[in-house]
Length: 438
Ligand code: GLU
Image (cartoon, helix red, strand yellow):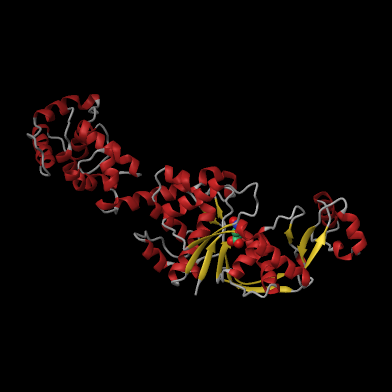
């Protein structure tokens, strides 16, 4: 069975970057009839917060990315200890004592000599007596001893990849203070939960190489890995600089529609033309990892705003009925109101403006040059109640009386009735207007 997972660290809220990872893993599991795990990578007790874990769940739920079960790394420390023991016993985990400053110095020296800054494994040369001596003043950290050979895998997006393990430092799995690091925890979890597919950002490619060796050292089955491109801002700049404005919850507050978001995220970076999805099933159906490429992908919130408008325009009344009730639209005219408003809103919040216009009326907008014309037109307004023919009847009468036609005829009348130059089809709007201030 296909098992995927989304593994955020609850050290912040979800943002567009990691949401894309969540969506891909969700879609793969759904498409294969598999299961999707939400795994909270919370081994860092200082930075991980319940508030963020809850926020992540809230955001995923808002988007409809439902998960089958939640796992927490902080609940599995005993398991990681066991895995560490296993690696120690097989000679794959070794204790090191360099301080960050010493490591930094080593790296600088290597770079000065034109060498790659790879950990030199000096700790492997320490005798037991030397280690005992060091332990008196320092807490050792533990590194995984990579087999220095090429690590190859077929990446679901990037194709055949090969990384020379000798060009990578032996990864630290346990810190000096005993904290298990992500690499070990993630590998144990992926093995234990039978994860079959791991999709994540291309910043994890090197991690994948080392994780493959750790998985093998623990006797696990290596999942299929795929690395999606990272998002950049509209100008190609790194997204992380603007992360504040990229939080999913901020977008929700701005009125971005979940389906706009999902359609956009499932399409960004793919070679297929954008097609607005109207349901999750449609997204699942259309999703294919092999359509995605390696080039950095530009993300622009303006695209989401445009898509939000398109999503709203095709919503049935049932999808907005609660919003309409909340702003006071009586149920017997909700269908009519929605018909008029649906293509004239950027977000659901704009509904209130149209309801205000309809229920309370708007101050007429009359250009000086149109004052006489509008006065003449006012006298010709058909008697209420207005219906869908009223606008036509009125404008025809005004045209006859004044000789105006086209935009010169229609625009001043629209502005006089609605107080604005843009808006819904006037034939449909007029019957709804309850309070005309003209
Ligand atoms: N917690 C890791 C991250 O957010 C998970 C990476 C992974 O998918 O393995 O980067």
